[in-house]
Image 1 (tube, rainbow, N blue to C red):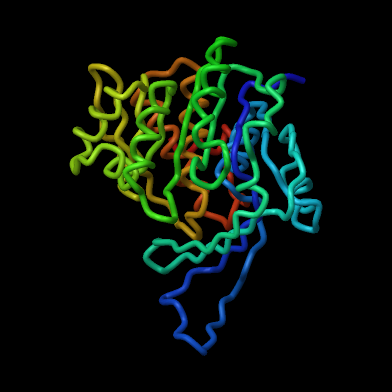
Image 2 (image 1 turned 180 degrees about the vertical axis):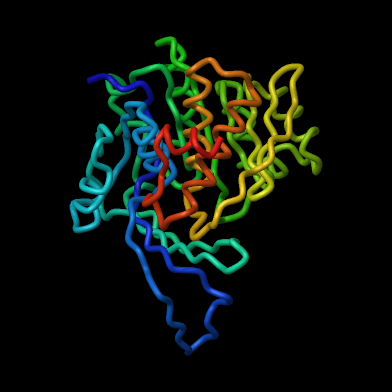
Length: 301
């Protein structure tokens, strides 16, 4: 069955700790009450979150022919998986602290081997194409060609760069700016928005990003909420307070909630509220354990 959304980008396993007060000192050890194994990667998280909301999603990515690749097939049940085979499945160790900040250690594995020649364009179907983790896969300069292909099929395009773990260079900045000419919905966080625009306040960041091409910018501000903007509109939408265990992937669930609302034709502020609520609920479990259903988001709203 054809998907409503095609998600293209990184897929890996996440190894997630319970909350730590601080990192252990070198040559020492810290005990935690639990460590969980979960599917992960921004593109995979969005596809799974949409599936939980009742929207059919397809995932295009690359994994290894190994134990973790097999695990992902089970953990992403319900998602239309179209995964090519590379060297080894990517792995991220996610460390969450008591103040809900996070640190990640990532082995990109097969994600960095995902290149333009791997893409079967017949698989890009539905109403929306989402591309995630610009800096962790090998599509880079060719991303705009894929976005243009989606537009040629009448699809909406959405984009989440993620952070460059090597640090944002002037080349990164220019390449992202060029890519944004081909994007309809853009989902940066505040740090990413600052890096792209060289602005420091949220209204200016959103305005400059809109000038670069997107129809809509949803600027994620962590536990504060989000700023949503389109031509002539700008809103701050506050977050929802929940008992948070793990914030890993919450930004991807936000993206999924926003795409869901956009495809339903909702107004900008409601899209932001719905996305905030979905993201908040996702933090009440580890990894993808508590990605919410439509009914659960409705209750929080």
